[in-house]
Amino acid sequence: MLLWRRALRAAGLLRSAAAAPRPGAARRGRCGPGEPSAGRGAALPAGPDLRHFLRAAAAGEPRPEPQRGSAPGTGKVYLETYGCQMNVNDTEIAWAILQKNGYARTKDLDEADVILLVTCSVREKAEQAIWNRLRHLKALKARRQQARLPLRIGILGCMAERLKEEILHREKLVDIVAGPDAYRDLPQLLAVAESGQQAANVLLSLDETYADILPVQTSAGGTTAFVSIMRGCDNMCSYCIVPFTRGRERSRPIASILQEVRMLSDQGVKEVTLLGQNVNSFRDMSEVQFQSAAAPVLSRGFSTVYKAKPGGLRFAHLLDQVSRIDPEMRIRFTSPHPKDFPDEVLQLIQERHNICKQLHLPAQSGSTRVLEAMRRGYTREAYLDLVHHVRECIPGVSLSSDFISGFCGETEEDHQQTVSLLREVRYNVGFLFAYSMRQKTRAYHRLQDDVPADIKKRRLEELITVFREEAARANEAMVGQSQLVLVEGPSKRSDLELCGRNDGNIKVIFPDAETEDAAGCKAPVRAQPGDYVLVKVTSASSQTLKGVLLCRTTLSRSAACH
Image (cartoon, rainbow, N blue to C red; front, top):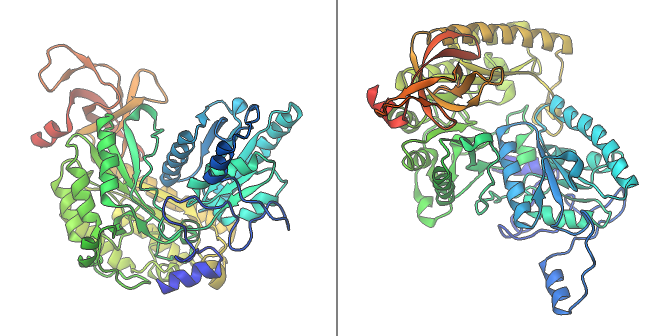
């Protein structure tokens, strides 16, 4: 904890508990430690708060006639999301807050009064996509100014946290900047922006989880949904910007999570993914009686940079409670850290038919030397021991992973060890990227980004090739088998085919044809989004399974037959 606080305070990002507002309380729009800024060297006045409007109403002050986009809470908002699933959930939280404050949502960029980009800062390429998008929006904003139709542009999320000053001052295009812990302030920040001044709040919070806000789900068809259970990360891996853009770990109360999942079940959602930067380190300390619980044991051979955290209801308890809500709802979770897989979690996954037999085990590298430089807290051997243990506990489990190519000091031998790990484990799904150094990280301050870009690219291409070869072999083992598939909708490539995902989160394509219902319905049926169907796999690639439709069924009935 002390290490984490020192790092964030050195970066100027941590708000002390004494300075933090009460959970849910409005905070003044500000740019960080010190005075708010409305431009380089200029002070930004705080926006109006609730007391301002109450005093005005009591005094009977006349209200000006609203023009398009000029009155707080009357404009149309266009939201655009970049990056990870946490950002998708953040978009839903931000929209829930704005909707409650009177804003309307539009999918038409040209009719928007406010454009908000929910951003990612994990890699340089993700940030460059935002800068490119802003250049496009600059022309739109200029046209709107000529037509005297004001347009406000905002940057939300991790990039806002990391590059606040540059965003605000680069070409004066952006009106509001809000970090991941400042979404409650969006109405107030927009009110300040309506006066023509820039507004920002990028302070990290020690307790914000948005537990009292039910996100407005935006996933297509309403078949699947994301539920955020915790925010932040304490692991301080040397390459990772997340602790500096998302803050330290804090978990939502279990009661609020269960309420949201029940609501989604009532709405007919058939798959929920529990989200967190380090999802399986969940630790609910919201009730006094929770604080006496013992800390779970780490995976064998794993360590942390922080001391063990006693007390709190843990991930195994949450997973147990969530899986009991609806036997017809699949449960997934991401993104975990390999250190936090006690046997209780693995046994629960194996026992419950609606907890998907699919785990994300981010390795990052196959070299113990590089893993040490990354401060991952495990060796290659410990990671492989965990993989073998997982496969013993959960037969047929599908595995996915993350890998970074060309980290600081990586040699050709280190790279080949990663290649061999890919071959040995044979993942079903992989996320592979070239290393991109981020400011504020330990690697930025302590290590040299000394692997040339062309070598990073070549090594990444080799990793991708090997991953695809092994994933194709893993998926080909399913040819001839029947897979339970949750239908998501039409295939992107053909209106004559449907698309869904199996238990292992692998895409399955099959014909959109009439089929029988396993419940005994005599009339033929057509599968709809949200239905479970059995598909016999006839072919496989590294990313997709194809098959023929056998019947429509249910999650419970399929589990009983197997």
